[in-house]
Image 1 (cartoon, one colour):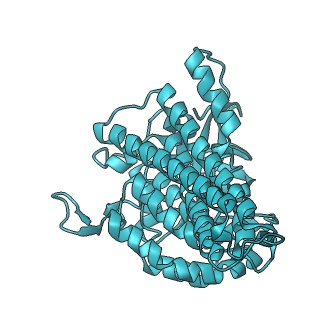
Image 2: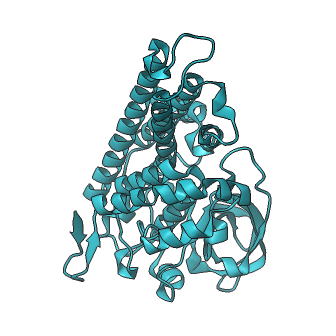
Length: 402
């Protein structure tokens, strides 16, 4: 399937099925390079080259700049396929693509700054509003550091969260600032037990001038107030936080599927120690374990599909998604991530102690999914509280990004 732009262009864009197929074709490569990616603490360059050649960094880039402007469900599906090959690579691609979507929410000049000269430019990003800003003529001077910038080794730009101040130094807003990576440095701080290959290091700004048009209010964006003048582009009308949460589910689902397929394959050739079962696949306990995990993964995928569809339905209508709906979707995504993680735990138990042999890819999947699903946007406990307060009419603000 493919999609064609409207009257402004006759270019035919790759559709959902084609983009998912491109991602699926890369699974063997990502599997082969997974150990190197983890060891190097950054995505293998061979992966980056293959992903670029497949156009998979263009999934959410506006078609005006040669991107594919694909819907959020397509973005999640692409990440899910990549996650079957390697969780770290899928995560880095996911973050680079969602930051391209964030950039599509900025005004026209900011988008031109990023993609006008380089349509292949990639953007990393961190939401957390840290550092300092000083208002100056034409913009702000920005100083600060931002941890967990996944994919920053492979980016040409970054979006970073900053507090915006007025002339007196009072904080008046929280914003995302677009800054060229050439104006930033990377401090290696990403030494972790899981998702090591995402290269989620700390990016640092030292008194960098950022023009005013390269800021967008995070608070405003969470309420659907975007700067892009291209309001006919449905993708860039999607609800801010639900998108930010849902995209993270793609790599998680991919890893869970990879774990399931690995355990099913090995169960046909290995036994169970200290039992009479010559094949694990003959044991009812193993059958129940994989069935349980398969059902959990299927349920998590169904929730993700539903959330993606609802996000795009609101965007297509041009409707502002109510706060209670946004918090509900956030909770549903967090539940799906938690369920996928629990499925992998079940599969590791079914497979047995050999799951943790260093040569066994299952141990990396286990560590990666345990780490990935602890991302703040996937926190089930916080999502429960935020949505529960909405249901009860409690106006206390747990997070400004509701």
